[in-house]
Length: 625
Image (tube, rainbow, N blue to C red; front, side, top):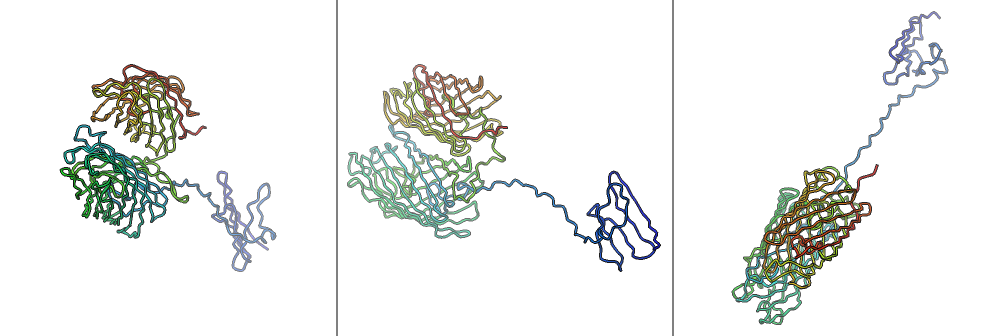
C-alpha cells in the first residue's frame, strides 16, 4: 500500500503538544487529534467507512518512537471523560438563635395583662420596688412596695404564674385625720390560656387565686383604733385581647373581675367585688427599647381606693407609664411612674393609699434564663457583634469589687462568686452570680461595726443588715470599648437592731474603670444613698487604684469623701490564684462593713482591719496554645 505520511510535531516549555497525522492516498484514512479537555489523551476519528471510534492510548514515554496504534490498543473502547471533582468547601455555619422573650411583644404591661404568651417552656422572672414619697413625718422606709413574679409557659398556649408584693409602713398621708400603720401582702397563683391567635387579634382568659395579709390600725381596714391583722382570700378573672397593628405596635383591652371580701378584721371595711376595664398600648421602636402605658377603670359594685377625708372605699382610675430597656437580650431594666398598689392580678387594680393622686416610681428587673425545649436553639446571648473575648487572668481579678468600691465588671453567664469577711470592719457573707453577660445579682448579710451618726441621735452600731444588689454593665473595655461602665442599684434593710437603730438604706451607683496598662486599673464610683427613717440623702464620690504589683498580687487604695459626713478610706493587698478561683484580702478601712453594697457610704469612728476571702467559679478562659 502506497501511503505518504506527514508528521507534525510541536513543543512548548515542558508540555508535549498534540500530534496530528493525516493519510493522504488511499483509505482507510485516519486523523489523530487531541481532545480539548482530556490532555494528554488522544481520540482517533475514522472516516465514514471506518469502524467505530477508538480512543488512543497516551503518548509513549521513553525511547519508543511514535507508531500507529496496534490492533490490541484499538480494541479498547472509548470511555467518557471523567470530570475532576473539586473538593467541597467547608463553610462554618452561623449559630442559630431564638428571639428571647423580652424582645417579643409583652405578656404583661406594668399593671395590665395582655393576650400574648411566652414561648413554649420558657421562664420570665421579674422583681423590683415601688417607692412613694412619705408626706407625713415618720412615714417609714420611703413607703416601699417590694414585688416579684415568675411566669412559665408550659406550651405555646398555656402559661402559669406566681407573684407577690409586700408593704409594711405607716401611710404617707392621713386617713380620717390619723396615720394608720399598714401591713399589706399578697401571694398569687395564676393561669393564662390563649384561646385564639390570629394574624392581628389574639384572645386569652386568665385567672388567679390569692392569699392576702392585712394588718392595720386607726380605722383603716379595722373597726377601731386598735391594731389588728388577718389573712383573707382574693381572686381575679380576666379576658385580655390584643390587637397587633404591626409586630412592634399593639393595643390591649382587658375586662376583668376582682374579688376581695367586703370586710376584714371583724368589721373593717374592705374593697369588695369589682368589675374593671383596662386598656393599654405597647410600642417597640427599637429591639432594645419598649414603651408601655396602661389604665384600669373600676366600675363597681365594690371599690379600689380609700378616700383620705373619711376612709370610704371608692372607685378611681389606676394607671402606669414607663419604659423597658434591654441591657442584654435576657435582662431588662423596667422604669415606670404609677399610682398602683400591688402587682398580683387582683391587687394591681388597687390604688396606692389613700386616694389615687400619689405618684410612685417603679424600678425593677426582668430576666429570662436561657432555657427552652431540647430541640430549640439557644436565645441570642448578647447584642455585641462578633465573638466575645475570653477572660484573662487579670480580667478575672477585676471581676471582684474593691474593698469598698464597686467594680463595673460583671460575672459571666453562670459564674458564681462567694465572698466572706470578718474583722473590725464588719462580719458578713455575699453571694453573687451572673444572670447573663453584662448583668449580675448579689445577696448579702452582714453585722456592721461602730456606725458613725448620720442622723442626729441615730446610728448603725451593731445592725444586722440584709442586702440585695443588681449590677448592669453598659461598656466593657475587655470587649473593645474605651472604658468600662456599669450601674448598680441596691437596697439594704436592717433586720435586727444592735446598739443603734435598725435602719434601711437604698443606693444608686455608677462604676467607671479605665485600664491604661495591663496591670493598672483606675476606678471612679459616684454613689447616692437614701437612709431612713427620715429620708436623708447621702452622696459621695469614690476613687480607687488597683495595681498588680507582681503576678496575682494586687495593691488596692480607695477613698470616698462623703458630703457632709465622715468619709470612708481603705487600703490593702489582694492575692488571687486564678487557676483555683481563690483570693484573700488583708486591709484596713474606716467603713462599717464591706459585704453590704451601701457599707462604703457609712464610716465608723476609728479605722478597723479586716480579712476577705473570695471563691470564684466558672467563666471563660483563653485557649492555651
